[in-house]
Image (cartoon, rainbow, N blue to C red; front, side, top):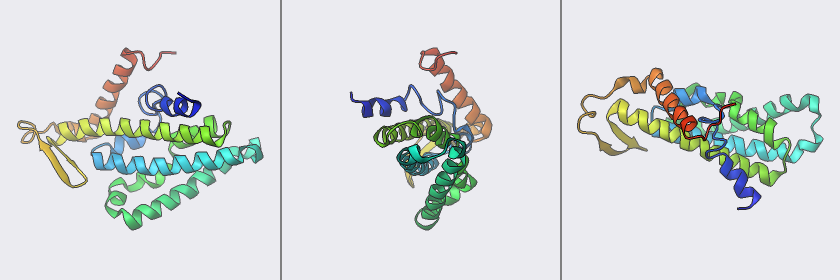
Length: 204
């Protein structure tokens, strides 16, 4: 596996932004009630993270150290504004569903953390691999959490308007706590515990 592949693979498990690095938990808790929300947020994060990493890696040698954070935030805010307008125009249902958490991608710690910790110190190609790996890792985390919460919380699963299945018992008596914030904490906590138990998440 080349360097590109190694940097990409890190974001899937070893540096998974949600379960290992514990970044971006606010939007994860809020929007992981359905697979549709997970896909929408993942798309937004992918576009912004990829664009930010490419731009920041390209200009990293010309950015004064004392000004790097304000410059990074301006770049990220510009990309988020573009994504916000695109979602509003072409994906209105997703735009409404994600609500305030779409424009708040500006302050999503995943984006700024990768800009500061990786893109500002590495060439463009490696930064692209990092952005793709972290985005896919974020997507896998969101999909897993959303799947568990949606199935247990509603007793059924629907994706992009297609009803995939309804569980015989839970379909009539879903466990409503899983669609509430408490359910998100419970699911994320159990998965993090599993990561630590299996040794993926190392204790300091």
